[in-house]
Length: 317
Image 1 (cartoon, rainbow, N blue to C red):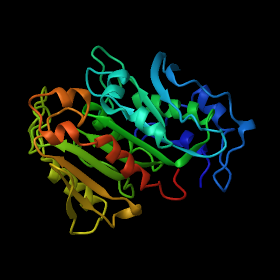
Image 2 (tube, one colour):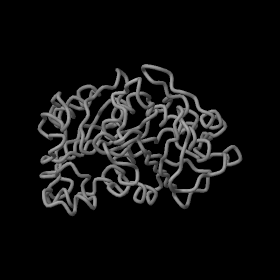
Image 3 (cartoon, rainbow, N blue to C red):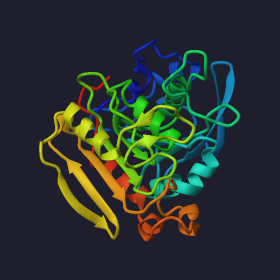
């Protein structure tokens, strides 16, 4: 098992990631060969709840969820969950319940807030806008200085614009083990040699990001169909030619490519009749336009199952 130090060593393809004071402090935090940390090397733990971190001249906020049974010695996996356009971390947690469900399964969960009015993650990474990728780097460096984190089990997920950001983020470093996109199937853009396990959850009746391809609301360039995007991931990551097709629950059809490079899978969960809402969220359950599958499919549980199956390759930096 790797040390937590690689959390601090991410490199952007366009520029080096900024090194914050929190990241510098985190260099003293690490895992031993058997995945056990030395608590004396860690700074005091943070309380779960709404917290802040100063980065790039701005005070950035995030919500932290830590398993109650954490003893500070055994390496924990981490999920970063990004909200959609016009939302925030509080609304994302209401929708996904990733914090509540994740900590129950032993994950540290972080739900950050984007900047802007309305809030929006900086994709594809405009230089003149918020340094969101650097913020995530600094944030995980801060957490690595306080908690025993497993550097091979760092995962990202998100909804809509947050899903697009998550898909871009995993291409920046081999540290990330897997990504799960909800209601936005972003195209494969990782460089050669990068093949993080990739999952998407997409409803066929999504009016904002069309499942069968077309114009995203507010955009002028059409996007390809979700199934075509996932086939491209599978081809790019050299997965097995014939995917498995099966129903995960009523109204949900899975297409899964296995045998991919670096041990990853590519999975598309299609929610028949599902809209743009996070499946089984309070909004989805109250939505007269979504399908029974959109109201009941446990997308968060499926994502945590997928993450639990994957680790970053040994030696990732």
